[in-house]
Length: 77
Image (cartoon, rainbow, N blue to C red; front, side, top):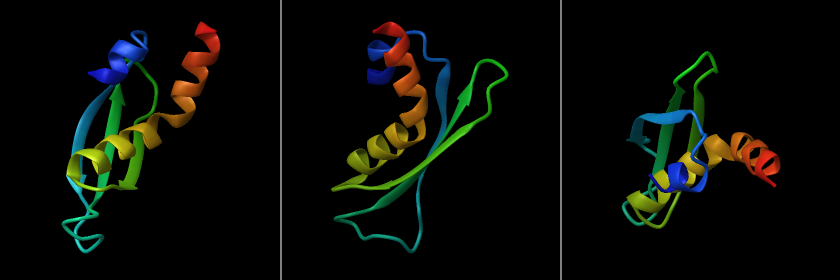
């Protein structure tokens, strides 16, 4: 939701978010995310570690969106 408010024209939505088994620990979990678009754009994937599950999932989402967000912000600027 936060990314949608930041860049309302962003066409990607979260398809799934999952912990990566065997990586990290409960204090520093690793999460993977898949983002799908409403159009013909390919899915985006992210993987990140964080200080807790929410942080890891948020970082993975931002990692997946890195290039897309850069283009959105450049176009808006």
